[in-house]
Image (cartoon, rainbow, N blue to C red; front, top):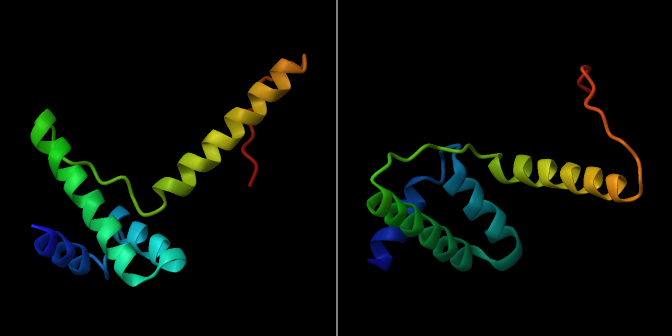
Length: 96
């Protein structure tokens, strides 16, 4: 099963999806083999959750983690400012 999962991960290497970006991100820090095994674990976790819940898989995108971390950081900053006594109102203008 491990071999099959790693082969599936290698098949996603040229695609622009969550599993490929996960493998690239881990491989930068820990090497190719650990990146492959970690992504195979992610793939098996996704398959398990599909079988457990019966819901179809929805691709989150290759930049899912960056967006999640960005939103998390903004929320933490807002909470910090609220604790300090400031009031935060959402603006209508988006900044880049």
